[in-house]
Image (tube, rainbow, N blue to C red):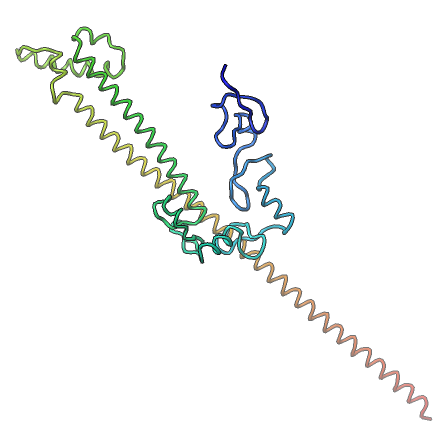
Length: 307
């Protein structure tokens, strides 16, 4: 009996293949608790409930420091203390001041030399690095799938060549593989064209002779692979452009939000200053009124005592 392993969430036992890598979650738990991005710091975390949209660390910081502000470098709304998020603060201490990101053009890319090797030597910010790595991983998986498909197709052609070289034309009609069934009509047409010219002809010899159709098939496969690679490159570029646009829109939204907050703070400050000035003026007028009232009383009392 195959060994069973416990899901880290519901603790029910499943075959190892049924559990996710890393978190070791079963299918139902993966659906109920998906991996999402934190609304504030944008890191991925396992969602406990649909209403939970921030990670545990940000939830603790909200309780301690209140709602965060946009970071002055990356514009991510995760600056709980001061004007910088913790990620940019730590990166600045370790790598120095930030540079302009080659992807989103924001001044928030730190020169992490080890990480640059993983993104083709590009100088990217944290968000763009994650996006670029996802694209590279997706491209790698697609190329791996394309390579395995090409190898499988090549193996089918080799199997077809081996079978055709050791069999007779009549036995070829009974071969079951789809590639052989597709290729036999092509071969037969060549046989017919040669026999009509009156030459003696052996079908098996034609299949094994160099320069026959299987070389044409290989050339066609190479052209198809080149076309697929071109399409894949175009899709990668489209994905990068879309992610760049999304990043720019998010940055613009965060910038507008920060400007609106700064404007509101300035209006509140101005209102407070005007209120304090009016209150001071009011107190001064009250003092003047009290002094006038006192002087009038003294004048009346002097006028009464003078006769």
